[in-house]
Amino acid sequence: QKEVEQNSGPLSVPEGAIASLNCTYSDRGSQSFFWYRQYSGKSPELIMFIYSNGDKEDGRFTAQLNKASQYVSLLIRDSQPSDSATYLCAVPNQAGTALIFGKGTTLSVSS
Amino acid sequence: DTAVSQTPKYLVTQMGNDKSIKCEQNLGHDTMYWYKQDSKKFLKIMFSYNNKELIINETVPNRFSPKSPDKAHLNLHINSLELGDSAVYFCASSPTGGILDTIYFGEGSWLTVV
Image (cartoon, each protein chain N blue to C red):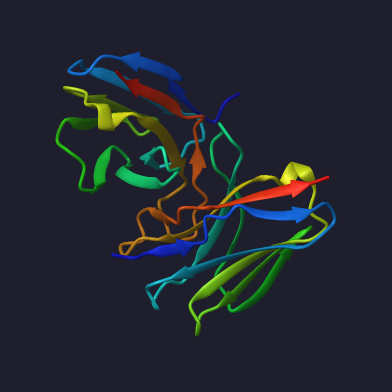
């Protein structure tokens, strides 16, 4: 059974700082990795996915994948109070038919 | 237009009752899911259907029975509700169910069993 581990936080950063969220996964064969954001009382929404080693950038968000070390990170540059949410890391299950989610890291950005 | 819609949004019911949650997606996706998010915010897959066919049935009590009348609908029926069933139930869909698919979630149904 694949597992995804995240530090539950809360991670607190001041406005304008870089927030770094980390995720480790158990299955070395995992090929794709997803970051979802969930605001309190709302549903998860996709921020970005990554499947190649290295960095993938989208606006203020950068996903970093290191398959050798089995971790994937999400960096949020110029953090804003509106970024305050829970960030969920996910990988496909063994059959590739659903996503397995980590327990999420709660980010709090103070103005 | 809401892409993935589920009803009801809030449901408070007594132990032992039977209840249903309905879900519809208008995205033309082939795959639909039910996820459960418990009080600790852990989001866990329950069921997955691809074009009306059951793909995933995780270790969920058989009091939970999904039904997919067509690929745009996936309903969840729960018999003999227990206190531990209190959670947020998210319906979701994805284009094909493939490993690079984005999963789109509905707004969630907050179930409270008293």
